[in-house]
Image: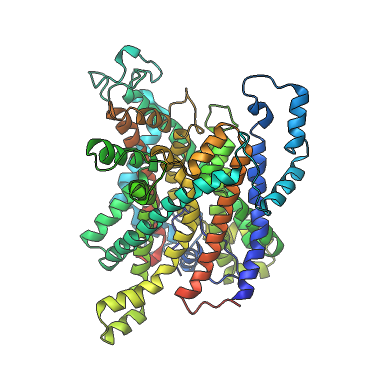
Length: 307
Length: 333
């Protein structure tokens, strides 16, 4: 197990370097950040050159990249061009987005798996066909449409929740945005769980468990579900990264000041340190989530051994 | 083996040393094990006299599809969408770029069944003309992703070794970038108002998904006896790959690509909604929805029509992909 973790961590290094370098190139292709700093006025050449030297911008791109990565691993994410340390922005933004993602993941896990089991056990019946059709519709309606619709219905028309989220972003306020964020993934989890259950319900071990006279609930939860969850766990693990990145749309609709908001502002204002810093952290989250998923396989399925 | 996870979502790196092969190969194994002739033999041949010759996977799938109402409905819808994106004049006589401010946010009136948007443009005309951008992006991006992905994945799977390691890690790198974030960063530089930057971007970040599926399918297909036989007969690598491996590995790629088409259309709309995808004067559902969203309290019709059209289009392609998967995956029969 330990050796496997180490090998996977080593494998992550080139992927991490590649992804972050790609983002680095994209961001610095955005344009001249020093010019952006001066807004509409033309910068004084001497001042511009001084700022460039201070910000390490006069070096070739790969040197800038190495310098930047060196700083990150010392815990220094640099300073945004408006003088705020990027780390400060992260400290306020990440807890909000993590709360939002957590709500979304919990919703998609609980509701998705329950619906998937119900649907899979009643394969071909009306419950199953209805659920399958509903999930198709949910997948087809893009998040920003459901977001605005639910905001309009719950926030404006019926007045059940406040349509926009305050800067505190408490759990209660994030409930509706969390549902919006989770919806599409929820549909995928339902379909995946259903397919997996349908495949496994015919398995010999299920028949054996039934023949032993185990109660139905125990057969489903301990035997069937445990064997059916591997693809679902894979999906949810990789979805965590996608949700944190995809939160940008939800955060915009509900005016949540999380990671997506900061990133959007950073891109609009050509604020390279903010963008690179946030995206780097998101890439790390994504890679770690994948690693944890691979390790979870062993917990779910003892047949899987890591040498 | 697990069912391949839904295509819109990433899956963890797949390599032979890992405990579980998470994507693709499950369906691929079954598909490849099914008695499958080459592509040319199957498909549209008359299914009536099937008793005389063995049916291929493709003619089987086609028979299944023709009896599937989901396939018929979605195929008819897609045909309609393609026709109106080629010739929108067929059902619209007004110009989508012709707007009268006096009619800003007005409701329906004769000749303008969906009413007007904030600029006073005809919502019906804009909804119909919006199909063109979405369908173009969807089809071109899918073709690009499928070609690049199956080329890279196929070569990686067929040759293995160093080529495989290198190409798989390259795929991981592009996979590690969250799509919407990448789109915001990458497309905010672009100033062109055509669909091509969006298509290029989707291909750039989308190919690893198909590459993984293709790689898994090729690895399964190349281990079969007939490939070994071809090798023993002295067939070249190119001939083996094209004549023997590719026809038996192409099914999972087709399935995933069809479902992905729908998600690419949704992705284009999301990017346009965020202001970095298509730009005016291109008529796009994403742009219209974004403009309408601010006015949802006054004029919900501005949001509902383009949003409905977008959802229906995505639904049609996902349903088609679903039907094709059911037909090609014998395990689900």
